Amino acid sequence: MAEANTVTGKRTYFWNDEKTRGVLYQIVTAALVAFIGYYLISNVQHNMERQSIASGFGFLDQEAAFEIGETPIEYSAADTYGRALIVGVINTLKVSVVGMILTTILGTFIGVCSLSSNWLISRFGNAYVELFQNIPVLLQLFFFYALFYEAFPGPRQALTPLTGIFLSNRGIDFGVPAAHYAWSAMGTAFLIACVASAGIIKWARRRQEKTGRQFPVASVSLALVIILPFLTWLGCGAPMAMDVPVLKGFNFKGGVNISPEFSALLVGLVLYTAAFVAQIVRAGIQSISTGQTEAAMSIGLKSKHLMMLVIFPQALRVIVPPLTSQLLNLTKNSSLAVAIGYPDFVQVAGTTINQTGQAVEGVALMMLVYLSCSLLTSAFMNWYNKKIAIIER
Image (cartoon, rainbow, N blue to C red; front, top):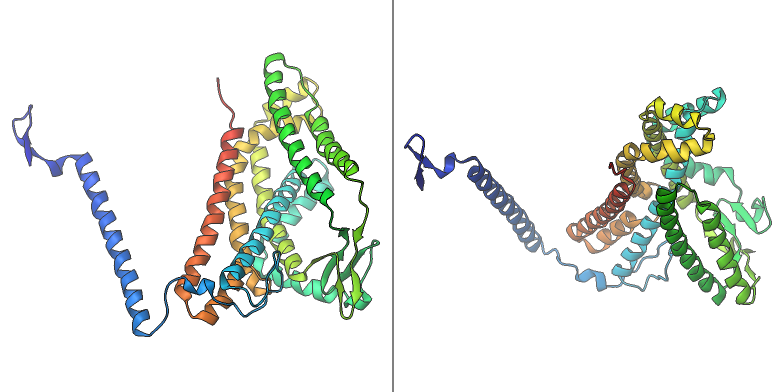
């Protein structure tokens, strides 16, 4: 309980030790949180039993009995709630992943434009940021949703800007190559080319560090990802058959359809989030001292080389952390899809809750899905941030 102090001769009790108190406080806090959690869970279970409300996840194996507008995998009303929720997860991931890629590209472009020495381009970048950043994202989703329905005619009067592409209030329909084993083989060849390109990039970086000589990485990588799949296509017989959409009744059959709901959600999220990403990119570039730019120009680097070899590698250390937050916001904002009828995970889970009455389990699944998406995105961006970090010698 107490030890004698060798200096003063007085007894020192364990609660007077700072480290011991810290451990004790953490134990008490953890026990308190566990008690509160246990109390809440047991209280919920008691109330659900008292009101004869079913609990557990057994409902996932029951028949869903409702249709879903967009199904990237095979699904019908006779399938289970579990499969319906999987469809919702895939729809959420589809708009989130495509949105993050397009947002990064557009935001970077707008951020660079806002720093341009050209008056018109810089004003365009600044006007874009002020416009889309200050309009609520939900309002933008409503606007683009109404625009897609009002701006385009019905399927019978569909616009055809190019052969095989039809624009109507049912979405965008376009032709795709007909089913053939060549396409899967080309996908495999593309992945092999990407792996080979990654190896070449790593080898070229080491070679440049040792010798100072650059290797045309971009040209070689681009040639690989184009030529290898093309040769695979030729080796599989060069199939040319197309699955073209055809008007049958009141809608198109065949090809691929991009619904107005998906289009409105994707455009709204990308334009809104890209405005914030543009500000991040602009701030990251401006954080680099002008001496770096002047030094690069003094040795004769061209503008594109100046940006890619000097400015951006250093600016990424500033850009990546806040960029991660904006990409996470895009994924979470995709839950607003329920407002315009896109069948994302929130809408499918909401329908499931209405039919089964198991709100606790449904909301818990929503939280788990979005938490998993956020953690995976953060893990990838943190890995990338460490990979691009400049190691000082």
